[in-house]
Length: 442
Ligand SMILES: *[C@@H]1O[C@H](CO)[C@@H](O)[C@H](O)[C@H]1NC(C)=O
Ligand SMILES: *[C@@H]1O[C@H](CO)[C@@H](O)[C@H](O)[C@H]1NC(C)=O
Ligand SMILES: *[C@@H]1O[C@H](CO)[C@@H](O)[C@H](O)[C@H]1NC(C)=O
Ligand SMILES: *[C@@H]1O[C@H](CO)[C@@H](O)[C@H](O)[C@H]1NC(C)=O
Image (cartoon, rainbow, N blue to C red):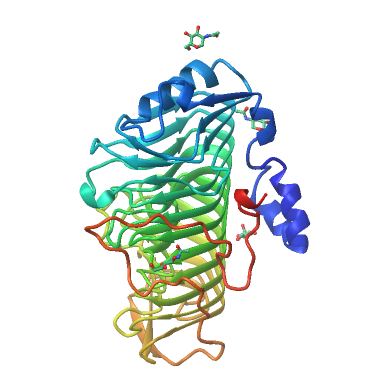
């Protein structure tokens, strides 16, 4: 929405100073939705029909013949079911909206992206009924079909009230661009790797009130990135959120994640790399609640999940972990806290503050290597490298059993049959309301 910062300062009161410091300016479209309704570019007027076996060409025609010809227009996909076989790249629109109130189902196995929005400015992708969805039926072409939605090099925009289900590959990719707001989303992928929820890199992004169920990235920041605020995120049996993987020439700074709830899955939060160069600095990871993850707080610069990138290692500096409460599945097999940093480029200024991570087995270790700062097994100073230390720990005094959310998963979704389309929840973190109401309730 326009004037996002003003809205936040009203809603969050004192917390707004953090928001202001975090984002570098306003996010979302510069003009309101109503100003884009002067011209409605309805796909049904451009060769589409409800029940269509390929709604792709009608979307493309409505865009080139109507949206591009009319500043202040809305490409409209009315409620109803549509199949889609021809992927669309919608390039260069200004002051426009894509209102997707229908459900589009993937009907081709071609790779790429079903819908790409690129070089858009003053843009909004949303459903007014909070029920617009893309159904990827990923089980039919796992890791070989398309990604669902990609927003590339766009500015001043929002994506909200959209449901993305079972992508054959990643669900939502935000590639470069700036001043974006992503919120009120439900993403449901399968219980396998390669099913990323949201991957984002760029400048000045606010991502909030998102639920991701899958077995890979929940909401993950990649390089290069600056001024990114991620909050009220529900990772429901997901892989967990991360920064990475970090490669050669990494440049990421000023990142804030707060109020992140993770139930099951791989990690509470991971910073991951293998070789590489550049920096990740000025990061605050605040108010994390988690239960039943395999890994906990996991900084791993020897991550085997990615091939070794050129460089001595990425410099990690000034990263604070504050107010964490959670339990991993087996804290001896996988330490709830581990900092594995490369000797050539040790991690410095790592700070743990009120981090209470424990194990469902009531036994745990922590693990540190070439990592400096305050808390857990971090060593003071920043002098030189040191070998890995593994130490048995006792239950942290501040540990309390993390609360649950209604709708928590006990197991992931099937890998070989269709995943149902959910509704978008209205709570994404225990005890906190969503920041903006669902569009259907406006
Ligand atoms: C609308 O756009 C199309 C394709 O860009 C173009 O061929 C056509 O002349 C335009 N029509 C008007 C009325 O501007
Ligand atoms: C995005 O909006 C800002 C004002 O909020 C404006 O300065 C900037 O020019 C806009 N970006 C583009 C590409 O128009
Ligand atoms: C460390 O990072 C925080 C943000 O997490 C920032 O406010 C602070 O200024 C940074 N400190 C330095 C010395 O850059
Ligand atoms: C989390 O997963 C469970 C189990 O399938 C599901 O019932 C619940 O709706 C999911 N939560 C959300 C918010 O989608």
